[in-house]
Structure formats: structure tokens, C-alpha cells
Image 1 (cartoon, rainbow, N blue to C red):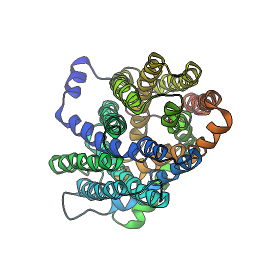
Image 2: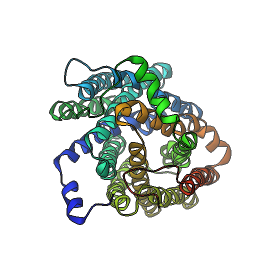
Image 3: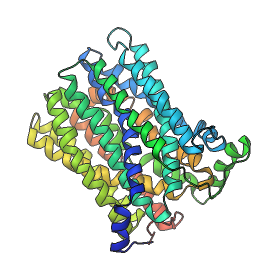
Length: 417
């Protein structure tokens, strides 16, 4: 279905989309607090690159969240309803985990840092499960593309504040204070949850735990090419994710300061991401999800190659700005299409579980494929490492083309043909 100009304007300025910006914000904030910000903290404390790379394993909850997602479909907390009740529980626990991480010691006790970071990612992943289900259930099918764009906008805003703002603040205050401030900002999510409406359960909910655990997977895997769809989700952003895991050590290694990284990489790049997400949402409505997944995927791969060019140029602020603008623009468009695609292939009765399954495959590269990137960068050098990350994006594009030609995936948002 394609919206008219008048309908598009109405959707763009609707109040209920603001909720998805705010929920995207509190989902994006914790991610880099266990990613690039923690990497910068550990680098400053003298932790070696190999250990930093291994810290990708603290992101395992993002990959395994489908394991406990059925509980969030089956049971309803006594307050606020099924979606908002679980969301409030996850947000309060996440704030507490960030406080615990703030008081850890990377230089002397990396194990305690890992435990605290693992708690953050567990409750962050739980929050993601509920937010994804909330967006799927509260928006119409023809709003999923723009809803994904607004979510990406908020998500990147949270990443910007955590990483860009956090790194800039870390030049003036200890990292411990940075994490405490971020924990306080997370209360915005609690307020949003309390003021937002609970979505209707038009499709009902699982009546038993067995139904909540078994039926979502049975329903999904009975579809044509279900395994190929999962492989596509696994590979679509693998090169981009592997490259991103090492960008902060890369920037520091070629001579950029933390303030330059915060200002150029995060603040300047944010606006390119905003533009990418919004333009991506509009293009999805105009040309369909699957065509845009193809086009945006090619742009993502080319933007990863830009880091190899920057490695050759060295410490060049104009070069950094150009590479970051391109990477964030293509990344914003690609992510909007990616998450809209996953939303349209979920059954609303099991939206938390099925979406968690899909996004778990989406998160595997961030944990498994990203974990050896420190060793790879040391062995290959920056140029060859980023070129490898560019080429590894090809299998995902080939899978998309295969699914497109077979016509085995279809959704109400956009058209296959």
C-alpha cells in the first residue's frame, strides 16, 4: 500500500509516532554504553585490543533474547498492561545496571566490568523486545515503514548522546560520572512508558506457556523459505556491524582526539542519520521495502569501504566528515528498511517472540562476528580489515535477490514487484 501526500503528512505529524521516537531513544542509549564508550574507557585505562574485542560477548543477550521473549507474550504484569508493564520493569532494572557499571574498574577488574555490562545488555535486550512488539501492535501495517524511521531517528539520537556526548564529557569528567548521568537520562523512558497508551490485543495472546513458546516458531517455520529469510537477516548488515565494532579504536589509533570523535563522528554524523532514516521511510512507501533493502544494502557496503579510504588518508577531519556523513546516511536508510521488513513478517499474536527471533539473528554479527575483529584488525591492518568488511556484505545481497526472484517474501508495507 502506498500513501498519498496528504496521508503521508498526516502520518508524519501524528502524535503517536512521537512515542516511537522516545522509545527508540531509550533503546539506543544503552547499546553504545557497552560498546564504543566502554571501549574508549578501557582503551584509556590501558586494556589491550584483544580484550576489548572479546567484550563483544557481553552483547549475547541481544542474540538470545528470543529465549525469554515468550514469557513477555504469555504473561501480563499486574500494572500497566502486557506491553507497558514489562517495559517499566525492564527500564527500572536497566537504570540500576548502568549505575552498577559506573562503579566498575576496567583496569583492575575487567571481569566485574563484564558482569555489569552483561546485566545492562540483558535488560536492554528485554526493553528492545517489548518496544519492538509495542511498535508492531500500535501502528497500522501501512505505518510500519515510517514508524521504523522514527524509531531509528530516536535510536540514533540515543546513540549520539551516549557515544558522542559521553566521549566529549569524558574529556572533562570521569567515565564513572558519564555513566551515572546516562542512567539518570534513562528515566525519560520510564516517563514515556507511564504516559503512553497500551496497544489493543486484537489478535489475542497465548493462553498457555507452551503455546507462547512453541506456536510462534511453528507458525514462522511453516512459511516458504523461512530459513533463507533468517540467513538474509543474519548477513544483511554483517559487514557494517563488524566494521563499526572497531571504529572507536581505529579513530584513536590514527590520531583523532575524543572530542573530535564526539563532535564529528557523533554530532555531525547524527544529522546524516536523521536524514537517512526519514528519507528511507518515504522511499519505502514509494518503492516498497524489498527494492529499498537492495539499494540501501549496496550503499551500506560502499560506506564501509570509505573507512579503508580514511585509513589511507590518515588524520584528516574533512575526510572523516565525508566518510561519516555517507556511512550514517546509508546506515539510517538501511536500518529503517531492515526493521520495517522484520515487523511486517511477524504475527501480532506472537509479535514479541517472533520479532525477538528475527532481531536475535540481526544481533549475531554484533556478538559472534564482531568478537574477533580486534585480532583481525591487528593481523590485517586497518585498510585490509575494512575492505574485508565491505566484501562480506555480498552474501546478504545475493540472498535478498534470491528471495526477491522467488517471490517467497511479501508484506503489506511496500510491494515485491
